[in-house]
Length: 105
Image (tube, rainbow, N blue to C red; front, top):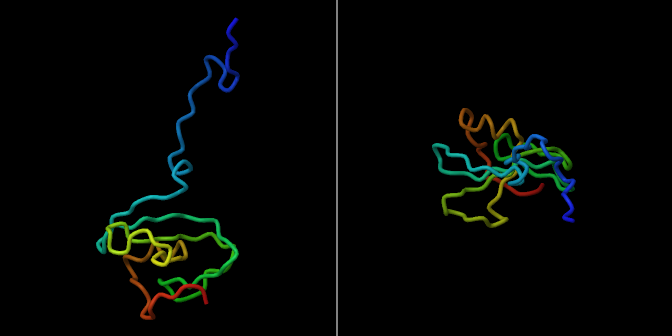
């Protein structure tokens, strides 16, 4: 006799796929300055300097990591920038800070 799976009971409603969770929160955003791959992260052990406000993103703070998707810089780790979520969302209105983007401290 064949055994039935107990993962989803017969007749139970199908649960749709959470695309953001399946892609790791990575999306591609089209902006006036090109296409950007954007990933929302929970935070890690390092602190970063936000290119939008030139302030530190503290270690462990949730933030956005973004890099160009249009082939200028590729997917190299050195080309990724860590932004405060609010700074990334306001970037079209404010623009980057005058200081060149720096990694870490």
